[in-house]
Image (tube, rainbow, N blue to C red; front, side, top):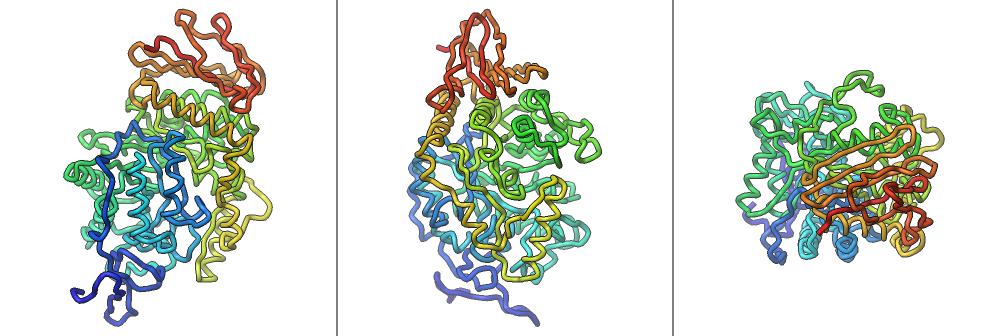
Length: 553
C-alpha cells in the first residue's frame, strides 16, 4: 500500500473469492460495489477558530437528510443554509446517516461502508467542509450512526471475518458478533468508527440509531465501552463530544452512571413525549399510539420523562419501561416530528398535513418550552407541506420487491390503507425535498417567526435551560389543558397549553406578578390575538399556548 498515493484506487484480493473493497475505506467514489480510494485526512485546512463544542444542555438539534435538504443534495449545498439555522436559534445540526449506501437515494440506514462518507453527497472532503463551516457558524454537528446492523446490498464485511452471528437476529437480519469468539476485533471495528468520526471529521456528537437493538451479553456492554472511549478521546482533544442513544426501550440505564449499572451516555430519546403530544393533537390511536390519549400522558411526559415507565403497554401487551424521574432533564431528547415519525407513515405526512395551524403553533410551544433537549425535523419550523417519504435506490430487483412488501406489512398495524408510494421510484424521493421558497410566504413565515421567538426566549431565559429549573406540572383532563411551571432562582415561568377545541379560562398563581411573554395566538404568528391575562386567569383560545413570566431581573 505504500506505493498507492492519495487519489489511487485499490482492492483487497481475497483467497478464493472476488476482490473486495477495504472494510475501513475512507472513500468509495464508485459506490458500494466499487473499489476503495486513498485519501489523506491531513490534506484539509481546518479553520474553526476556537470551537470546542457545546454542553449537552445547550443543544437545540435540527435533524436533516442531506439528499433532500437542498436541490443539489450534497454536504456543501447545506453550507449556505447554516446562517438561516443559526438565526432561527438552532445550535446543532444532526445529519441522518452518511456512511456509503447503495445508489444515490436512501435514508442512510442501509449503509454498508461505515468509514466512507456517501460519495453522492460529496465524500470525505464535502463532509469536512460542512463541519468546518458549521463550527465557524457556531453550530455543532451530530452524526446519526448505525451500529445495530449493516444494509443488505454491498455488505461484504462477512468475507473478512466473523463480524455477524446467527445467535441474534435483528429486524434487518443477523446481528453483530459482539460477545462470541473473535468478537474483540468486531467491537474494535465499531469503537474505532466512533473515534474516526470525532477525530478525523471533528463531529461533535453521535446519535446511536436504535441503540436498544444492539445485543451484547458481555460484562462490559458495547455501549458503555463506546461512551468511555469517546469521552476519553474528547478529553485528549480538548473538546466536548456527546453520545446520544435513540431508543424506544424507556430504560434510563443508557444515561445512568456506570457506577450504578448504567452505560454513561450523555442523553437518550424519549419517544413518549412525541406520542403523547401527537395523539392529543391528531386523535390517532393505532399501533403504538394506543398507549396514549388525553392530557394526562402529556403531563406525565413533562414531569417524569417517560409515560410508559413500568406500566402496562396496550400496544405491546406487556409492561414496558422503568422510572427515570430522578434523572436531570438534560439527559433526554424530545421532538414533535422526526424522520421516523413522519417517514414511517404510509404517505409520509408531516404534522402540517394532519392538524390545523393553531395545533402546529401549540406543538411548537410545548416542544420548545419543555424542560428537555428539543429536536426539530427539517422544515418543521415553517410548516413544510411536502411529505417525507421512505426512498431507496437498490440495484437488486428481488431486494427492491422485498422492501416494497416490508413497507406494506409495516403499515398494517396502523390501519393505513391505499397505495403506498414506491420506495424505489425517483419521484418518491423528489417529492420529499424541502420547498425553501415556502418559508418566505404566509402562513409559513409566521410559523417560522414563532419558532424563532420561542428559541430566543429559550436561549436567554435561565429557567428554560434543560436540567436547570425546578419543574411543576398540573393539568385538567376534562378541560384539556396542562400547566408547566419552571423556576430558576428568582426567575419564574408558566407555560399554559390548551389542547381543547374550546376557549378556556385557566387560573394562574395570583401571588406572582405575571406578565404575558408570548402567545402562540398572536397575530404576528398567524393567530387571532385573542389570548389574555385577566385577574389571575389566562384566557386561551382553542389549540393555543401562552408563556407567562414573573420575577425576571
